[in-house]
Length: 110
Length: 425
Image (tube, rainbow over all chains, first blue to last red; front, side, top):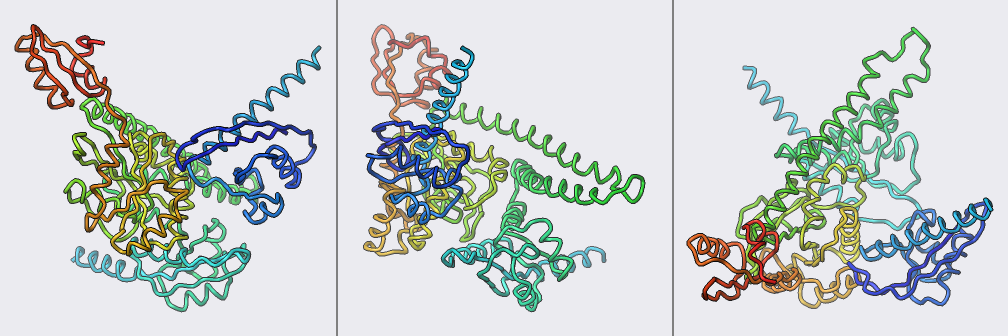
């Protein structure tokens, strides 16, 4: 499981500036909300601001529940820029996952 | 004689368009009065007379969506329809029909009913039909599967006719999709032609009943139909406008609404392409709404714009500002700052703030690139020059041995006039 965090400054319609991009990964046999919130918090350590994530990634839990699980300010994407940022993070995490998987495959082949 | 009977029949039918509205709210969530208000507005737009509004707070009833008692209470008003805010599953529709003998509609079907009554162009009719079919197809498949479950070979089975129904729906959908894609292609070439003629394309988008058509009417002096009810406009309407020297085509589009199934948005893709392909999007919102509702509508509009892949700049217009005093308006603008950074406060009825809007438009539209071209000093060259006066903005014309023209305009419009070879770069 790979989690990518994009820290960015945004206006409602555009990403104004990407401050940093960070990736963390973890091996897990099952996906529960605690595990997901752990990896999100790990990826976002040291980054200030509100965490924005897709509602599907957090089992469509209500915002107040996610907030209390994570212990940080949180919201689901509302504006176009927030969605763009989440999409960017999705692309990065998918690419990271492929990299790890392909690397493992080639190691196994060797 | 027949005609009179038919007319009477029609009159009766329009008379008994009465409905009771039902909203079920989940126990965990705070109560939301706007749901009922929205449903009421939609039912009025569809021509229903609302007899009563009933809401209930409970978990979803798998048989009837709401409690049996509430449905009985609703039926005590003797309406012709029961309109539910919450989506009904096919089995719930069947259960309510067979148990209480009542005709039911859910919010999505109500919206489709409004659309089909308003659809005037062939494109709009096809879009509505596609939306209805894509809603029906899985339901028909579901019903067929249920029918087949108890089937035994050769004994009271679902015949070939029932089997064919699902395939007929699929093939009709494919046919409509093909036709719509040609319409889409036509729209694309139309937009290209308009850009070649030197127009900037600006789209008016926003939540339904925000005042987009009224704004279009005020800005362009046209007389598009406007009404204080949702979904008055269904097909896009385009009017020309001149904003501080820029020639602009303003397109009015169908309004957005919250929680629409994605296939409805897909069905209206050719209409929404007017928004996604525009050079600038004017997002209209109604500032006289309560702050919570305003935020929710803006979020829904952002979601819809995201779904149409809008990449062009967006200017938010907070319309109906004449209904508020300045202090209240400033407070609301402050509250939606994260969703609308530099909104234009305007009123399409009184014309307040529209000068500011024009300024904002000309600022946000991409500045046209400057070109210098050389034309021969012949009658053909001069006629080309006079054509340029129409399609581009001339900065300077020097009459030397040849005509040296400095102008501002799109490359496409120069290419169309056959002047791309005359460019001096």
